[in-house]
Length: 432
Image (cartoon, rainbow, N blue to C red; front, side):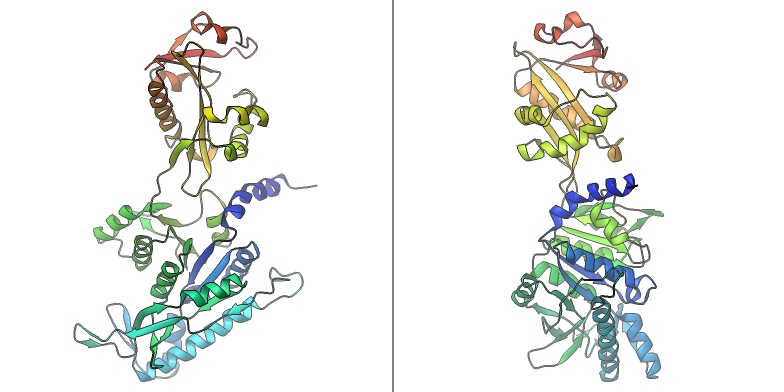
């Protein structure tokens, strides 16, 4: 017997699969993620993303691995302003640790055993000298020696490998034009790579679930909201700083996801609610007129309400002919959150509001109220002075919005003749 929950989940992910295909994601894994017990599953999920047609640039960190290598070498490593001071001995440990870490990642991506998630993946992992670096130099009287910063990204070479179907793997080491190696921040490498190649998303994977505020996970933040959190001083989070910087430089979406939660990466990318924190340039929903390509999304939205006989059933053909009557609320990721239709009457002085629906996962967020405000504004612009609505279950909501209950005789003549007595809908009207 087929599991309905599995079928429903698979269907719900299809819009995300379509929208992500062909896009470029930069995914950054910190050193704790690489050492975590869930690392294997995270790598398998990244391989799954590539199999769905997403172009992947994978950037890795390695601070705990470097710390371990330094301890084994019995040398001391100093920090200043959260950055490691990389002397010659420390640089050797950095090279060894990151080389071993890179080998670990490539090994996982090369697996293909039968009955494993990687079976048949055949991922080509591509590396190279994509990063040009320069020394940090002396700051605040401190010589950072072989600690550097990104000077340039060879975006042409990276994009060429992505177009050829490869997964590009980048370590946080860069070289100067003279061949000198520098220890870099993996977050800086990831952010500047995403900016350079115009990536659709930057995804930061760490042990944490995202940005917390007063013990609560923040699901989404706009750039101004991220800036406000950073300025408060009680949320000085390097991840948030990276996300804020990347969005400010043109990356549309930055996701912060937990490596510890199994499937968190897939949940973040293929469900509406996600699993972590999303920082974006503009996180407000868009209210816009419907287009012919929206018919399928409207059918998905109103279908469950039609089955419950809350809405009158509409065929695809009818929706296609009436699509210009509909107004939509659309999530920043492009998914339909709500809809409503406005039908002007023959007398041109009255109009009917119909087919108002909100996605069940977004109830209570004011979506219907914003739709109604838009419908009323559009009606006023069209010269309509009175709106009416027929409803079986939302009477109190319309009363709260200033509508008053009326009778069948108060409806326009053309609507009176179409009234369905079996539904026994209540009638409300409002002068605008």
